[in-house]
Length: 229
Image (cartoon, rainbow, N blue to C red; front, side, top):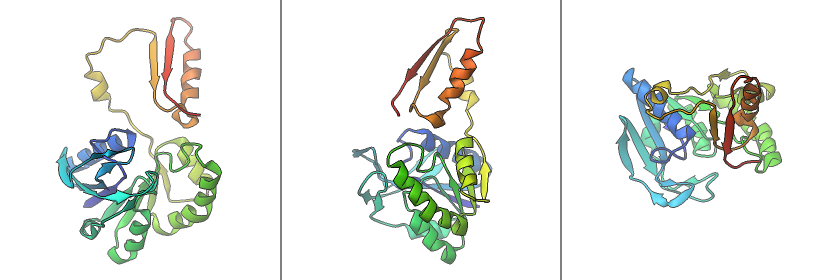
């Protein structure tokens, strides 16, 4: 089986989605499932960072194409059709990159399409009303017609797509690589907690507050570092 993962960013760019793609790809490869990544040849958050057209990272073939335009929805300047012909499954992580082309080619190349949500386009409040309109009248019909399975990585995402009336959805929440944490030689300080990331509702900070409020027999200190609404 051949799986093509499509994302605006991938290693060496660091982020949650990038790590997700890397982790599942390396595990699939160990199970003799071929994985390739199609991404941009520059960092959308810093266009000065340029990357090789092709390289192998962790056993994953990474193919990069040039693009231009607004970083939220960059437009490709080339299109590697051979990769689409190679794929049995195309795994989309961001509907703002090559989404329409993936849908257009599906009837001709007969691949399956999987989409993982990662907050979809509603994970921040930027242009929220406009994005809600687009989701309802553009993305919803295409999800029903073309997407074979939507993987929701959080209960918030799952509830959103469920209320949208979609049936082709599954909830598979993000996991934690415990081996990496257990192998750390850092000295833990009892009662010291750190949250580092975007400060937003879907990050579950409210659950952190509720959990720590139950701790009665230990003095604790929580540091929250990040930006957000």
